[in-house]
Amino acid sequence: MSSSSVRLRGGDDGPPAGWRGVNWPRLLPWGLAAGFFVFYALFCLRRHGLLLTTGYDLGIFEQAVRGYAHAGMPVTPLKGDGFNLLGDHFSPILLALVPFYLVWPAAETLLLAQAALLALAVVPISRWAQRELGPAAAVAVALGYGFSWGVGSTIGFDFHEVAFAAPLLSFSVVALAERRWAAAAAWAAPLCLVKEDLGITVAVIGGCIAWRGARRIGVATALFGLLATALELLVLLPAMSPSHAYNYWDNMESAPGAQPGLLERLLSVPGHLLTATVEGRLLFFLLVPTLLLAVRSPLLLVAVPTLAWRLLSKNPAYWGTNYHYSVVLMPIVFAAFVDVLIRLRAAKPHWGRWATAPFLCGSVAVTAVLFPLFPMASATDAGFWRSSAHVRTVQSVLADIPSGARVAAGNRLVPQLTGRCTVFEFGWPNDWRTAEWVVVDTRNPMGWPLNGAQETAEIARLRADGFRTVREDEGVLLLRAPSSEGR
Image 1 (cartoon, one colour):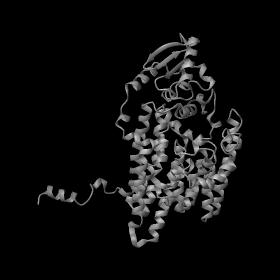
Image 2 (cartoon, one colour):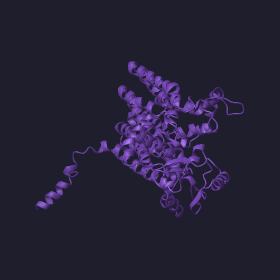
Image 3 (cartoon, one colour):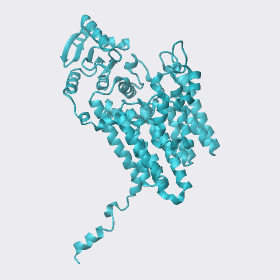
Image 4 (cartoon, rainbow, N blue to C red):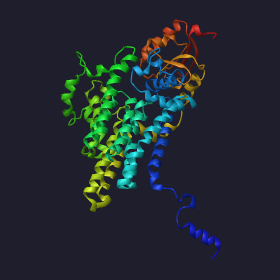
């Protein structure tokens, strides 16, 4: 037998020598997360390239991170000249983006960070499912979370600070289920730096820890969460807000002719669970990807604070499935799903994997059915990956604006400029009138903050005030203030 045939036969015994020490099963959750990161990143960057991102909210958050990077405070001119974003929502965790933003000072940095954070949340849930239920279960659960409508609605609407909450909650809730009390508390604590309401979620996690046995850690965690939220709502936010008060208390109050108030909405919640109201649809969409099994897990208690403030609010935007509000619920729901499946497998050991396989397959099927209803589905459209001539025209016009200028821009044009200019929303608030340049896309008006008629009237007023038309191409209008001529 030749030496070459010996080497060939030796190669059949397993992977190459350099790969034999690799723990392939351990890499599965990270491989799934990497795959989702690539998909999320491509999707978000493509939306931005198509001018589908907006000043409210991507532009606001880029200005905040830029403010941290260069001035030490998250000043956001889009909210008002000199407006400190810490007076709107308490999210100092945005400081974590500063090193990356200094490397690439652009809105794309925030979008890539959000993609990484949302993908990272896959790791603890799928790793737990793999360890207890096998690799097929890990893949199924990862697909359920990764393509969930809550995640899809988030990456389909700019960047938001709550992306940081997804991995923190995922690691914390899985640690809670595995009775690793200190880890559950440690992962939960930074949620208080993500947004002011999440301290209540930390308190619930602490309550669960105390209830299940570790009283000292649990009580300490619960008190920390409650005190953090109280401090943020009653002291820190009012101190940094221009109004010297928390700006969102009125979402829980009644006014003549307004939406029902807190008491009325509290009494109506049970009825929403059984009816086709907006709130009922939210709860249905939340639970149906787990075939309703998540309600059998005590881990779902961690979702109660977020659900409570949303369902009790009088703001209709909080009741539905749009925007980013549900992304903090997705890791909790799918961790609860895994928890129920593990207990089901333990209750029927003689069934083996067949005890959970129908539920996992059903969950993937429901996710596939829901997928076309939410923003990520646009990735399946070939046109999504092509830039139109109009998009190229807009980008050409924006390139004529000098860096460092003060610009009032249409909502979809704002995040194209916030990395290099001081930008205001065209038409709102009044600070926009101090801009040296005005750029709007009259062909594709967004309807906010001005409708088409109001936009036309404002443009006429600017021209009457001496603003000069620098360029007008395919409805994209660039004006320059007379006071900035010659600079």
